[in-house]
Image (cartoon, rainbow, N blue to C red; front, top):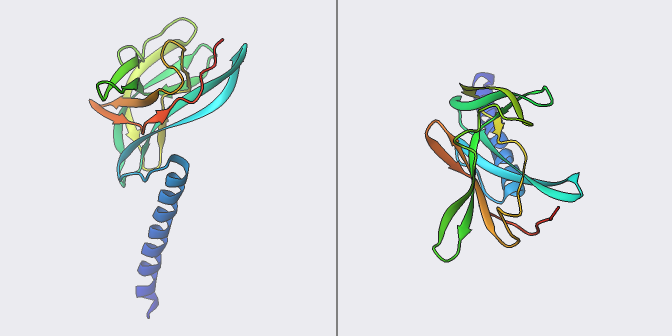
Length: 177
């Protein structure tokens, strides 16, 4: 095979192997494959912010598409004087009796407004989310009034009039402070 024909075949093969590796990594980490385009996921981790450990949740929107997408986000200066970015979201709990989702936390209405002990300055902007780039809701500790152990929850990220739900996740334990 001539070099002119071998280079495009090698390039396509490399891109395909990269996509397969990315899909497998995502499946291993989150338990599902991602679709082409915008996709939301949630991660959790333990932290200590007071009299005992807490579980933090962080939902994020990633562009797994081939093209950039314009997404509405909040650029703000925190009370620690750091520049940060966040997206609107809500947290929902699955109600077994009605087989529907009920909102328990809704940050969508005023997520980009200054407030004491959190945000000094804020502005709502629309910017490109490039392929492979991720936007986060920021880490959130669930309050005991929001959840109890055994609840099935999900985040729903809101942007540009669209909703991007994460996969459902179960609350294993809740720490009280």
